[in-house]
Amino acid sequence: MERITLRLAPRAGRLRLTMTAVLLGGFLAACESTTSAPTSPAIKDLKVNADITPFPGCNVNACTVPPRILFVSERAGNPEIYSMKYNGTEVVRLTYNSAVDNYPSWSPDYSKLAFVSTRTGSFQIFTMNADGSNVTQLTSSGQNSWPHWSPDGTKIVFHRTYDQQRYQIYTMNANGSQQTIFRYTTLAVSEGQPTWSPDGQTIAFKSNVANPTSGAFDIFTMKVGDPSSQRRVTTTLRASHPAFSPDGTQIAFVTDPYGTVPKGIYVVNAAGGIPNLVTTSKGVDDYPTFRPDGKRIAFMSSRAWGGQIGGKWSIFTINLDGTFLNRPSASIFVHDMNPSWSTN
Image (cartoon, helix red, strand yellow):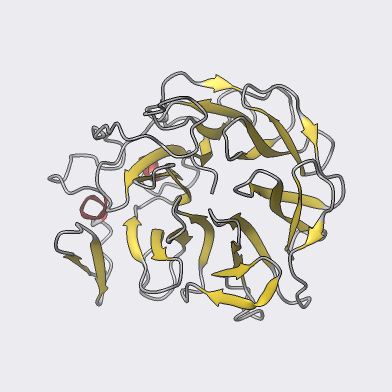
């Protein structure tokens, strides 16, 4: 067994991890709630403090409610795209077909979403209106995934693979034109899961460029059009799924077990530094996305199944300091996954 010593930062209320010998599988409750340990932290829903501050990017006058969460669910038998309110109510199904529809991403004004679908035979990128209408195909070659909009809504960044092993990052106009490689790399380097910074100048992505022979990934950032600006943000060698905070100062990411580093969702300064652990569990926590005001993170997790193989994904939300865990997903017996709350 291993032990993790937790240190609570004064005032900020942040949980900092000092990694010593060992990881106690039962430290989940301490990492995820500042309340007394609940009987079953994996599935207990904690009340979320409501706030009434306006949310940036809302296209509704005096918007004081978080925009809807996009997510993928298999509740109809195959992966389809849905949206719901932040508390899990008013679920709306947006896609209806027998193909895989996945990886939804809000446009900056929340009027459209980009997503990936196999409806034409391979993984291609499409857009549609927020109500599911006006579906438009943007890509047609290779296998394409992970679309994210630029802050001004004119471009989409994504990754493409031709061999299911090596990824390259591309950008294109929001109508699918001018598909361009973000940067050229050697055959041994794979880069993907890109997302745009809120100012539109930088893209965060995962890459194995620091150690291409191992295949292990870290989070990097690079200014658009300036390869010399590459910055290595993490050094865990098991980092993926980056997401910028709405103000661009932080990046959330996911890590798998590597050495003494616990698996879970972390938040780190966008310029690099010591990451703060936000969540961990006996299951897997993955795919973080910030609320548009930057105060909470939505993510998918198999924690409700306690690490059991074959456990289902559910959508959860949590404060950045690991408090007030909530599960909008109505059931733990169907897959709800890949949430998109903000545009980053």
